[in-house]
Length: 204
Image 1: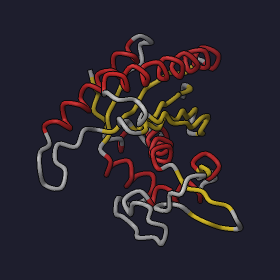
Image 2 (image 1 turned 135 degrees about the horizontal axis):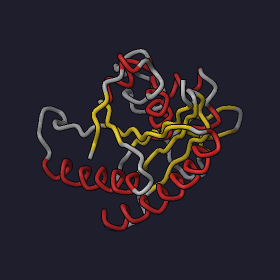
Image 3 (image 1 turned 90 degrees about the horizontal axis):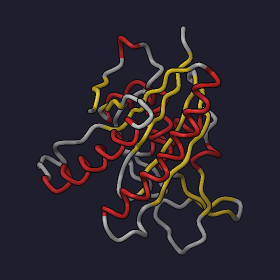
């Protein structure tokens, strides 16, 4: 079986998680916080710069390992809480197009996966889980899965502000978990489940 690299992206205008896995083992996990930029256009430009750097690094690795490369992103949700949000669909569509166009520069195919599909396959279910820390219940199971599977250091972030929601305080330490990185880790690993079980749609 040929070597394979999967770049998993949990894309958003707030904070985008980007993870790279090689032959079902996580190589890198990072994120790009975009909140400080005023317009969506500025955010897309910054994300494009980061993606170009990531893709360039992966390109070198793929040549060294003689590996195929694919990119997997989250599929656009057409409905949110029962409603169709046209503005959201337009803005995230532009973000997805940016990812596809940047990947095309390296001849990397881009696929999308439904949130429920990767959560069911990797985490085990797509249901939320209440917790005492104020972490989004929908995100918490993925965080727990990452911790259980040895990725705690990849998603743990220190908190120095007065923020309290989603903050854990233990042994004099204040920290939180970046759910965007956690999601991107799982999305990248989704690319290694049996092909017959993958529910991927190519984005062009």
